[in-house]
Length: 390
View 1 (cartoon, one colour):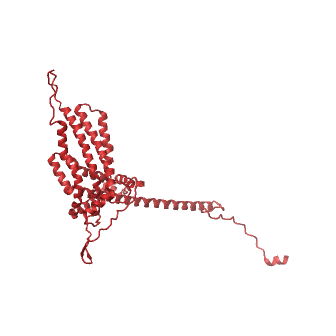
View 2: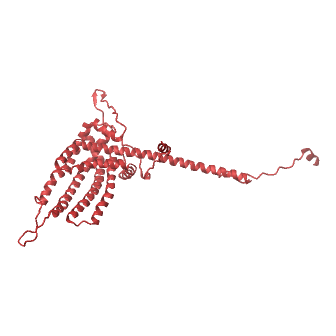
View 3: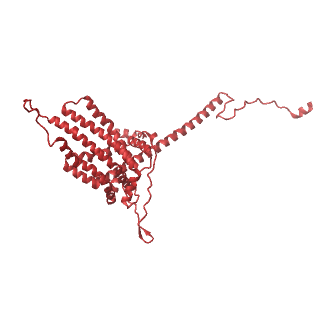
């Protein structure tokens, strides 16, 4: 009970608005309303607002369930771009491995006329597999991701309009409307994120290769550690920027600044959303059969749920930062008023002190006329006597 009393008696922790000076307040972009379908002459189709739960990510799931067929039709336009990535992963990699490795590993070496000692070259074969197969394969995946990047704009635009109940029924028109507006932003931002991930993967593959050959050292290990220490946080920046593009009307520079602010004030939510988004890519590496199941699931529901979650991430971050900004601005205004009121009160107190000390020239406020010193009273003269003297 004592601990509970102490905890209850503690003052609430004051919220801090990290990187608040970089925050750019923006509103959700109002999209052009699609003309309502005319059902009967003079009467249009009714548009009913749906009720969704309060939580941002709960709302994302509810929007997905309520608009599944509409969102699925939008994701079908994104599917061809995603199929490039899937085909590289499932089809190109096995053929490329057979081409480079020559159909298998060489376990024997040095056996010939000179009777050189035999040996097992599995380490060299695995090192070759890492550097000459997996590294180019990683670059192929990066190229496929860059090809698919512009089409993310249409997918996120459809997701945003469903999330905020901006009615649309012409899916193809809506998808390519978002593509026309934001394709270059998604291409630029996604390319930066893909290159960061490629650098991290290259450092890791190089370390594995050196370990097989016995040539690993502290420098190669440091390269891996540093690439993940700096690369993993940097990956969150393009992620949050892409979640903001289709929802909030800001320039590329302002979106970058807001992404930094949102990450600083929502670190756990951002990391959780990033891990959730990267999980399917990691699951693809288990085996080919499991990878096929994951790819089908992503085409059916994964991509549209991914877009909804990132839209919810953007709304949650902006809502929190707007509240922190309002709180900070109000606090600054109160402090400014107190400072002005405190100056006047101190001046008034100083005036009282001067008066008590007999300072007849004291002025209570700046700009006020100085008080004139009091003159001694003149002696009384009877006017009748004054006339007699004349």
